[in-house]
Amino acid sequence: MPDHAHDVVNNPEKYRFEVISGGLTSKLEYRLGRNRLALVHTEVPEELAGQGIGSALVTTALTYAREHDLIVLPYCPFVAAYLERHPEWEDIVGEI
Image (cartoon, rainbow, N blue to C red):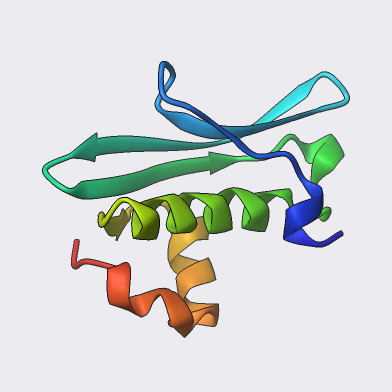
């Protein structure tokens, strides 16, 4: 399923981007500060694995960072692996 098919929302009260599907929540947790967006943990329930939800979460977070002139700090291994496969985002990625 393409990334745009998932309804990803930013939930700033919980410091995460999330998708709710079938009563299950997938999330990408972040910390925001000093023009930096630290992406710290991605979690997709096993029942929803393989549907592109993790990639949709990451893409939404990266788009948010670019639109808000933030540098992304990819602490989450899933995010780091995504960025290795998608060099088009390298201009907003900082060193950790």
